[in-house]
Image (tube, helix red, strand yellow):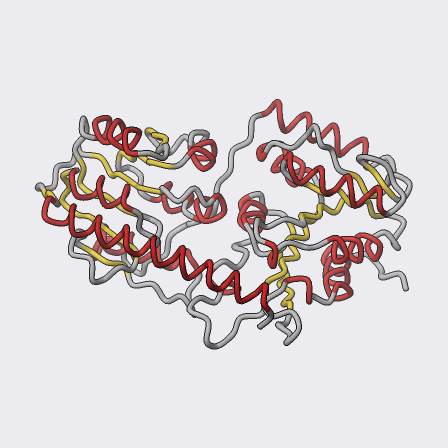
Length: 384
């Protein structure tokens, strides 16, 4: 482990220590006040999704739909709330802003309703969740994991090494439905609804690109963490190998800040701001919203992405995926390639091995393998 890696490890330990301390204090403070009531068919099911992890939240959309005919209220952070508000099977979505006073205002809004179940769908607890769960009345209070926590009535067992994320939702449904749920077979397909105007704009953009090349491959290089992002070299390797096939155009997607990085990479490769390699590698900095990027993926043929929210977005859109995961160690607490694998879509997983020089770095991936799988899935020939 080099000096830089030691500093990052120490920083993570510091963050984890203070997070655990805050959580322990919140448990001591709020647990004695947890309130319960009797079942009533007119009461709501309250689902808490307060970590603002977009991909994780999308994996819960099929579960939320399966809660019907229950009346469902979802509390979500700003980014996820934008997704949930478009789903007509959720009765109400409330936005959870950070801060004590915002949480207090949210509590008084929620207090107007009565609940049969409060379900915290993230296994990561935070003080805001504990406050709401303890002070709101419900017949059941369901948590994922956290078995030592007496604030909840029921704890869903999670196997972080062998079970896909949807398995935990099936366990909740079995708990709620009892014997009526039978074998537990249920449709947990992910759902995303996009505005028609955005879809039309994205389709028009893709149609123009298809005049240059028939096959549009979306490339996402960014996963929000340095060792999970494709760096410049990895991105360039993938792009150049894809473009050996003259029928392929590569469309990079990104948020507003990361489009600046793409500009820099294209200019380093001799291109201009927004395109490179005779216009066959492009990105659109004016189309940087998450919904527009989703619509572009929807209209394209395949997406290549690291292990991040785009795996789950593409699963919801039923798009072909080449997903790159860092190789899991048998000592890891979680096996990401199992828990967060693509769901019910045509997908291939490529592993980036860990090396002594660059441990747990996704840029160790064999870019030839990535491109080969992409071409195989699209029925394209490989050009040497």
